[in-house]
Image 1 (cartoon, helix red, strand yellow):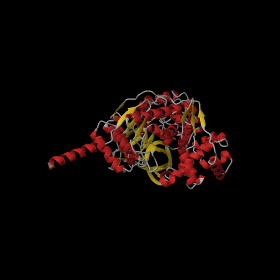
Image 2: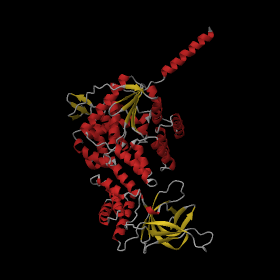
Image 3: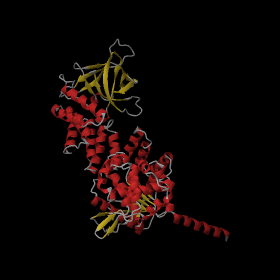
Image 4: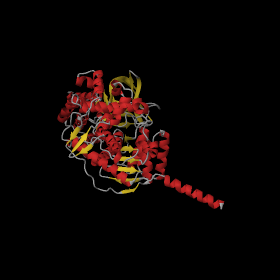
Length: 603
């Protein structure tokens, strides 16, 4: 009997373990998808809440979504299940921008948890609107809006949070100057013993500024300046004409009030009657999702798990996308490895907007034709994104298609002041390549006017100088290798001669990459290296000797040439020439300090 009894116990134990595994379901609505271990009823309630809140925000704050990404909700059924994925000891839920989509992760859901749903969606909405809010305002607004309630045909916002009022009466007050200066890594934002006071006072301050009789009239002005990135303490002091100490005193008095104002909107929360269909969540997708929100994993551990997932289903692009962002997220510039991982994901059908956006811009300097294909797909997916069209035009210019670049820019029907620097930069060089000097001049004038950086101003001014020079610069040309002279010796290398192309209309090849990214360096052109099939310009600069790879002569703008050819001989240059060299970043592993994009002898 003992073996049978033992087998029965083991069977029961195994069954118990299997039953204890969370059962994941997936439900999709028009604007969200949710992965949940809760019941179908609770999961549907949560999904409907998010659809209601989204509709309300779009009604009362019709702000354009400048960061359109799919939104995924992850809802656990209990605190125990949620614990391994908790962002910090304080958060019962959190909003997580991701590489593929935005996510809201919740410890539990259902109708009773609606304030948490609204709080997290407020974070998402503000980010999608392009607002980079300081922590106190980000959390304060989320808490104020979390009280959203339907009252007849109105929606009210700003009901006092009794729990927070009680905590502020019992806990030590944090100076308002500290609240305003808290950053994302501050203990006041992350440690349980301190975060409570920060959240309490952030809510109270936001409530007073936005809803009280004394502060509400100027709140819109203050909000605009804070959204623009100005220091919160300086803005409040300037807009309200009071020192922070006086505002803090008003806040303490405000919290002693016997009544609080609320915001009232002429709107209704939609009554969503549709019963969204639940389905078992695919195990592979659950693994990817949990890996994306796992807390405490090292990059090495995450990398190993992603490699295992890629081996498990090699036709899926998502592991390669996540590996690419994991590599890129170490604080390093985009490496060849990142580009290769994104290329693999793209080849497997990965088409997330964020990856297409990053990958397309990443390969513009080295693979412009591929960049055009990638950015064209993104533009087709998101036709309203003007920034994509401008980047696409830049890639087209880089790929030697200036006419297509101009047509893409014309489809915008004008550029805004914020877009003008890059937009006019691409247009000016595209017209220059098309030999339309009149339009190039007009665009270059605007490029200089709206230039945002010293590099932009240099690029615009150099183009204007070339356009206005009495003697036209040399036409576009190719570098052709010639056999060395018989007596040149064993160390001699082929001579490179810059010759005009037959039938060239006289246009000038301009820097073909993102124009704002061209960096100018001054120095003496002392040597021209021709080894291993590579041609490198060596400059003696104030920082020492620097080497710049000449990858493609057709991508180089030559200025200050006095005749119809440039003779470049491999080896030491005698005499050395004072030049300005424009360059962009060289590919990893090239050993060069940059890629040549312009060479100006007018020094």
